[in-house]
Length: 395
Image (cartoon, rainbow, N blue to C red; front, side, top):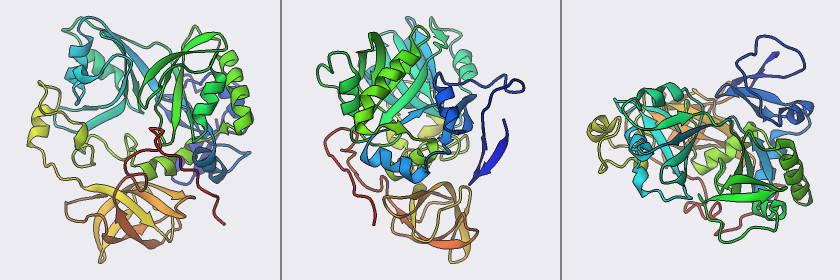
């Protein structure tokens, strides 16, 4: 696997052979990606496509905004079940799991005892005592096992692979792919079991873009390629195609969706990065609660727009030539036609509307404007299917 430098990241390529990649896991549809010249990052020890040789990041971005884009993710799923499953999850998560109904998803994250953040993800509730937690990049399994020792709960790896289908026409693809079409009201963050190509699969109305979208979950007993071939055929009339993580990045930044390990980490509390609304301090004790009760509740992380360049991840942020913060994410937005990112200030003070200088990928410092998140669709009507926003191409 040759290593290539690409913007701010080190990416790998994949080709036939063997050796020195024993710990890496490939998505069932990896070979199709490889034939398109995919460049990968390593995410949960899985290869996740960042970009492709036969399309540009901008072309793939517009799939998400105007049509249908697909990402075969590196998200890792854990199966949690047993009489004490809810009690256990309330111990490790900051939100009250008891409020989550069967058949629904919920955003959750795990905190350290000092209130720092370990990882986030989406919790699926299949039954009163059965859950899946689909985690972002991070070493979570030992943490779960360590905190379940005194409880009647089983935690296992179900061998699930997750793919995202996102964009304004994505639900039309699902309607076409489902045997007999969709039944009932498939709402944002719902879980459904849908028959596709004669196989029942778990589908959720979730995603990483704040676009209309859904995710499907390949389990070991599935004929994965028959499923994917059927979904591809259903998506062909809508020009559905693969979109790498580089295309997802500006869209999730525009939407205010954070990335574990860069936008938050062990040194940030949920309050500092604007995620305090997902902390239920009124529920019984959970890991990190005591520290979070005493923590500063001020948000120090906001969006940023930069007309002159693409903000550099970990780039310096200055006000009147004094370093006041750091960029945690950065990308170029084809829709907004400017650089976008997240800025974290070292101390509270600067707010949306503040003018700053930010290090960019061209090696220069450019003026930037601190902004609120999300950058548009403030009520998140697009992913809920309450608004249709298909922008025209610039120029």
